[in-house]
Length: 86
Image (cartoon, rainbow, N blue to C red):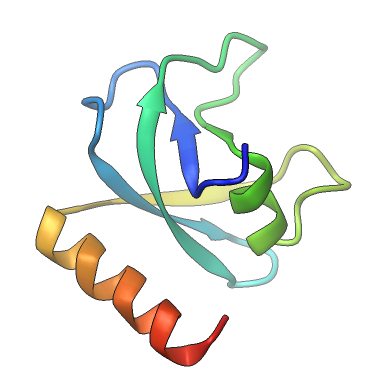
């Protein structure tokens, strides 16, 4: 729950994606570590930490864009976040 992770029905386990909140433009890189979601037409379930980073912890659902990343791209994006202190 505290890590930047997500559940997706078909993406490979341990793959990385950038999830962008379409209304705010905020984005976060998460690692797929579980299967799901199993409710309605949801396409991804975010951890509490990832939802918080996108300001979604209270709304529960939102329209998001998902972009697949290579391991190198994910490492670079996560390193940029750590360097910025966010």
